Length: 450
Image (cartoon, rainbow, N blue to C red; front, top):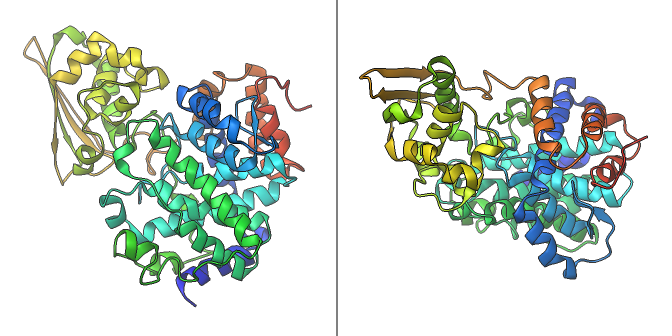
């Protein structure tokens, strides 16, 4: 069988009871993290603008937008869930390919589950399958695809959303192949959009397009059957590089959820070591920002490819600025939501440190590391080498830390009592009779689940 067919067969034939328990547990961690990001982003201007603009074009209002009281058709809800959950750049990431894997898949699934009866077991199963499909396709074209400028979360995410919704729609193998073909022809998203609202629009569209692909395939809307490996298929057209073994090897045994990472800071993953290290210096030495005369960083080369924005005009740009990362760590000792607002961008102390910061690419530095030197007016230099930053695979966030992160974001949209209730429900989501109940309680006017 060709890779597209192998993957489709796996999704159709998968048995929930055969899944390793650690993978199911990790799926619940990912869903809790995702929902917190969606609730935190539900009040952001990007989502509000999209809701206001697209409302006149929505179909029957059958589906929820997480964290909002408005209702849309399920396809628009998938798009809007994707915007809200990704806008803060706080969602999970698989470091091996820099995909934000949960957003396209979960955004489509929550939209579907809010409009259709879906058990928790089926929901979690579909999520795991969509996550796996997205990650394996991303692996098969990374790094060439990413380096060419594609936003791999969106371009690979559309396949994950198609697989997840397709599973809930009970597509047969032939229809799942078509769903992947329809996903491939809608695969889009470019890295030039980083630092703008369009960045979060891309995985939202992947969720919507993947959902659409599954619906059309269910109706026997045909598509090419070698979407991934064909001579004019996804891999050849977008990069010309394709390692099919990364799709098929260990399928059903080696799960990408096991190498998923959760962000402690609300920004691009590659600057996390800098925030981590500079925050440690802040805590240990409490330097007066006015006495800092220079900041020198040695970073992995990818940092300057992704996060080299120095002249910041809007808050979203700060999430992709290595200079801002150093500044907030040294001045504030943290990298939460408030460190990436317009007020933070305009903060004179942060502006000054950004201007004093230089970053040099060093191929001996890994993506989890940074070397930091901070010169003070006294002549003293503070030095730190971060070996493993918080949130990476060797230093992961604990369940408690993910819960705390959820609270910090969710309280922006919901009362604390409902937030606590949602945390407990997420840990047992696989036992729910109707996941739509969870979706509906995220609306601000709901009182909670009785």
